[in-house]
Amino acid sequence: MSTQRINSVIIVIVLLFFWPTYLAAHAKLVSSIPAADQVVETEPKSIFLTFNKPVESTFSSIRIFDAHDEAIKLNKPAHKGSDDKTLEVTLPELSSGKYKVSWRIVAGDGHKMKNEFFFSIK
View 1 (cartoon, one colour):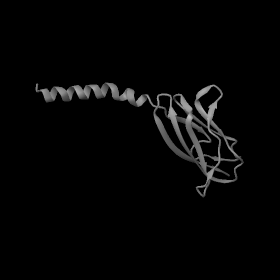
View 2 (tube, one colour; view 1 turned 180 degrees about the vertical axis):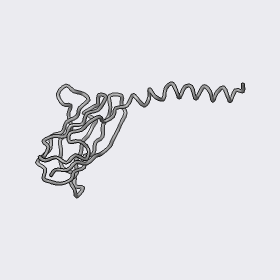
View 3 (tube, helix red, strand yellow; view 1 turned 45 degrees about the vertical axis):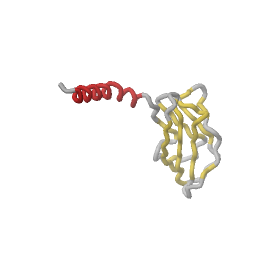
View 4 (cartoon, one colour; view 1 turned 30 degrees about the vertical axis):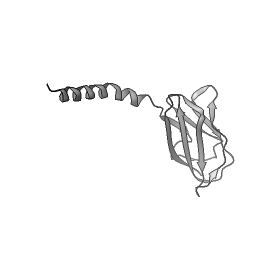
């Protein structure tokens, strides 16, 4: 077997062994309140984001935008009690309409993630 072929086989084996572990190591959003695309009857008092792994509240942010893409002033998110997988941010009074929630987190492993979703108030 040639050296190039042996090197290729070794690389494939290493990738097969380590790649799934690398992917499983990062935090993922598992739920939110309100949920993505949810239409709520009454205005929510807070936004909750729950991840499958611990997140750093100090380096994370949750922002909300109204239907005109205007940012609504919010405080920094904090952990919900002692739950280091859930971030909470208190909302001001909101009127009926569509809102965009944009979040950025730093997971306990240092990995940065960001995403957004929408919800509406009837």
